[in-house]
Length: 289
Image (cartoon, rainbow, N blue to C red; front, side, top):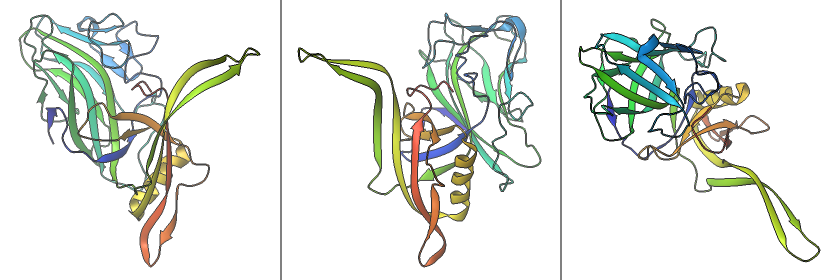
C-alpha cells in the first residue's frame, strides 16, 4: 500500500466506481451548504465546500480544508457502502476487493506548510506533500470480509496550521487490466444537427460531445468475464483509464452493449473467454459523475 504524486505504468484498466452518482466525488453539485454533503462528513468550520476556489482540477467546485487551530482530527471523510449511497457495487463472488483512490490536491497553498494525510479509515497515514499546484495522488487498499466498509479520509495529525484544496476523488474497486486486440477503436462523437440553406450555406448546431470505445477482448479469465458482465448487467459507472502513466487519461464510462459483452469461450480452452466491450462516457469526458 502506498501513495505518490504522479502514477506510473502505462496499462489500460477498468474498475467500478464507488460512491453516489450525483457529482459528490467531484463536489460539483448544487447543494453545497452546511457541514455535510451526502456521504461526506465534514468537520464544521474547518472545511468549506466552495465554487469560488482558485485552483480546481476538472469541476467548478472543490473542498478547502483550513485547519487553522491545528487540531488533530479527521477533517473530511467519505464512507462508502452507507445507506445513502446510490448502489452497493461489490461483486458478490469476490471476498477480497482491491480498491484504489485517485484524487487531486494542493497542499500549503497560501503560505502554510500543511500537515494533512489521506487514509482509508485504517492504520497508516499517507502525507499529502506541499506543492505549487494541484497534483495527482494515488493510494491503494484491500477491503476484505473483516473490514468491508471503505473510507476515504483526510486527517490532520499535527498541531501545525494547515490548508488544503481537493478536487475530484475517484474511488474504484476490483480494477482489472485490459489487453485489447489491435482493432481497438477510440471515438469522440458530437451531438449535432446539420442544416443547409436554399442558398447553399451549411449550418451546424452542436449540443455536446461524448467519448466511445470499442474494446475487443480475448483470453479473459472466467473471473474477469463474470466481473465485466456483472458491471454491464447493473449499469455501474466505471473508470476507464486509457494509459495509467497519464493521470489525465481517465474517463467515466458505462458498458452500453445491447447484449452480454463477454459471451463466448475460446476453443479449446474451457476457462478463456472473448467478446467486444462497448464503452461510452457518461458525460463530455469530465470527472463529474
